[in-house]
Length: 250
Image (tube, one colour):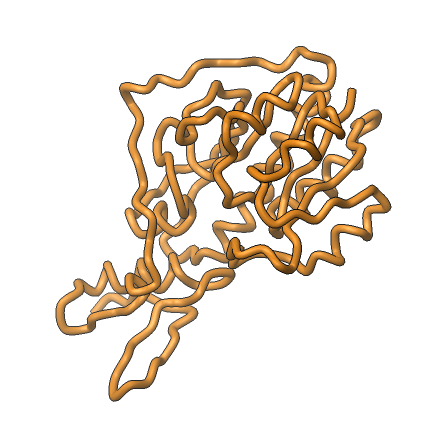
């Protein structure tokens, strides 16, 4: 079994550390973003960190221009952990047993971009991570497994990110051996229950103290804190970035 690890962020790095602890993990190579890629990863890592695992590393700019590379590598499974580029059909077909992804919601709830940010903005209390088969669609592939966790009222993005990593580790530990032995479950999503997130834009990070309710401001500070760009107040052409907040009762 030839397993390739595809990642460019902290989430994927931590999960790879966990995966390599598994006996006969069959992870042969790593594919990550090059320093020249135009894809922005707010939680991204220096490319050189991926070489510390002692595996062969391939640096790419755009995954959809790398069909020849994937055909050459001939993967049985590609594990995708933290990759912002949408993968097209031609690339998906190069892996014999599919591309396996992770999404930080309980699919089919919360399909789409910025799941951690959007989950906090929308006031989710119960969420989790879904391990699933990638398709051409938007986070709509068959589910392998899910791990649930709670978002506390004072959790900021940093805390939710850590919970996402811990849940992802549990999924890797449980299901990677099953994938390697072609015994992993495959449960279709109920598309009638799907909900979708919108893609945030940088302008959304701005706080309007005069118009936004205090709860909305608080959630915005929490959602956009590290590893993201931060919510901010702007006045007289200057920005004050707010990384942490606390909601107090009168």
